[in-house]
Length: 206
Image (cartoon, rainbow, N blue to C red; front, side):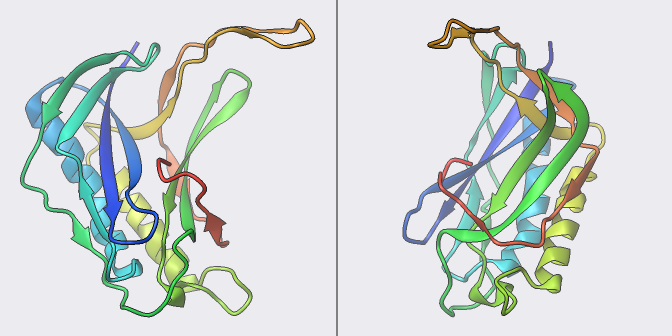
């Protein structure tokens, strides 16, 4: 059983907004001071990503930081943080695709149920200049996203960033097969990677 922080960031300023990014951190002291530290760590990511985003995009933290019990998903408490205004995109006003961009994979090396736990943060949308003429991401953008990911992941080792595998209820399939319940689990992210490909974001809550 682990208490984890959920820092939620809102993306606004484009067709289809508002979108949300959730980031999770392992709690150590369960305090308002730690809730602010978590938000500051997440801020490192978005500060570094801002130059790759169109200029009409704004990404900012919600003031409510949730504290969750990882095995059940039950809410423990909510702390309010202020003083972080977020970041405006700095990538210019040229045309771009509102539904596509890049992503960051968060690697854990931990098995949850039958699957290796891998988290994913979508960086959508990116500027129109983020793409090669074959539709993949430019080397510069891949490098920028990778550097931003590692800057956040290693920012505060005392409050580790990681991946939350959500709890699952038991269910019976039409053929009678029973899928057992699975408790949630939080695992520290031990590294990150940025695939050199464009991705499409289907849900604005990823």
